[in-house]
Length: 486
Image (tube, rainbow, N blue to C red; front, side):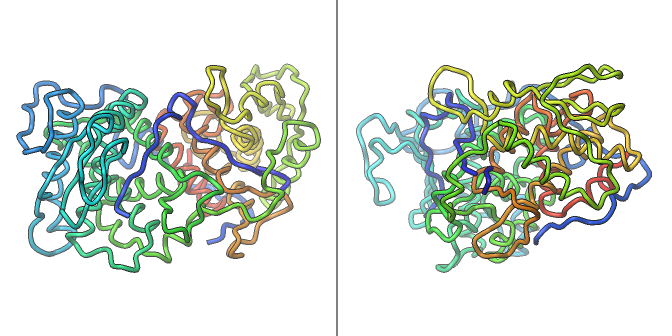
């Protein structure tokens, strides 16, 4: 985020050592008012499923799958990989005929486990030595994975669902080739996000308790899955959507996953080049001014305040005053690093805490934040509480938290200016490639404010937080109250 912003790495430095290479190869606008609706929102669900925390990974007592694996071992990583492939293939045997109205799903012909730190071997035309990877090779109908470095590091960093995510994604590529979803002209960006979508449809199956070997909770379990998708994003600002290597931003890849989880595999077949490019946030830096973060200082805070006033000018809000002086609020509200006091209509900031949050992730042991946009999104989250108050909406509870995330998303969507000129941004403040990914990282943090009510109580499911933000980003202000009403 900048006077016109830069981007930084999304996931904390503890995961920075792992290098992944996966795969085979509307303009929002301000709308007058913020309409409300009667009824109770399903704020405690994820795509209709109850939000729950608990163990994710292999089900206790499930008999290990029996699949032939070249180079396979009896270690935990290979067992998890084999059980995952077995469950994914079982899912597609059930879903493939319903999705594609043709024939049966044919299992992958060849599974290979290798150690990238050991003696290399030729596989699908490449040497596996030093290749920390998982991939599907269509020419040999082969799925291969590195049990030596890649899968253990993913599991140790993100938990067992990271391994499941990667292999379900590669199985998605196998489905694409069997169904004829790809041709020689299909951009990598489309193929990869379609595979992310197919991965999401499989995870819905697991979340419903229908998988033989795997289980995932809809709370912290899905949070870890979204963290993996965030981590394997393209480097922001370096790879454009037209690049032959493009896989997608964190925001785009999570969106694709959520489409599959919410709507099933049929939705994935509807993903086209035009639909993916229409919603992409995968842009290169195209302006020199984007190469510097927006600092946490008085001038920048004023810029953000002017932007918020401009975007929400037509909602009937009495604009709250933003202050860097922390005063006491009569109702006792005090959240960090920003707080909204309804009685005085003031947003008060803790600049030091915001600066910590704005510090980009790095590879050292010292704590760091997520980047400048993640910090200013916290400020916006308290500002939009005043928007909700003006509409007579409750400022407490999970519905308020989801509305908050949605409205921050609406503000964010109106600051995006892409190089193709397909958007008409509001005001002078702009987001650059990667800023939205900083927001996604902050949304997945368990202590953030972007999806929190006035008391700082955050919506429990990270999946729901990101989904609400995406709704506002894509659709604007109006749906934020109609979808999340109280």
